[in-house]
Length: 139
Image (cartoon, rainbow, N blue to C red; front, side, top):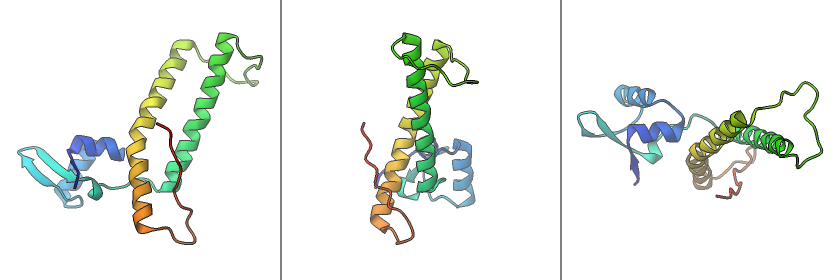
């Protein structure tokens, strides 16, 4: 059984470390005390904050943002003939790069959670009224 610290649990779930520690203190999240202020939490016991359909919606939103940012980069490089839509502001290159870096970090942060949800759904199986969560991600 793989165990993580409260800090790692916070990163995996998208919750704050303080929320993780509150859940441990309230008994809502099982954890093994390692030392005075350190806990070992089984990955399988981590709370899942979002359902798979919510994660899918967020992933689709992120993918849409990537496509927009890629288009913006092409426009800045002069490689595309398309222009931004009316009312769409041009994003300065440094801001665009920062947004792409944030998007990459967010995607990396979500991957373990998406993998865990996918594994859980494979173990539990999906019912007829639910769609299976079987998307392949390239890494």
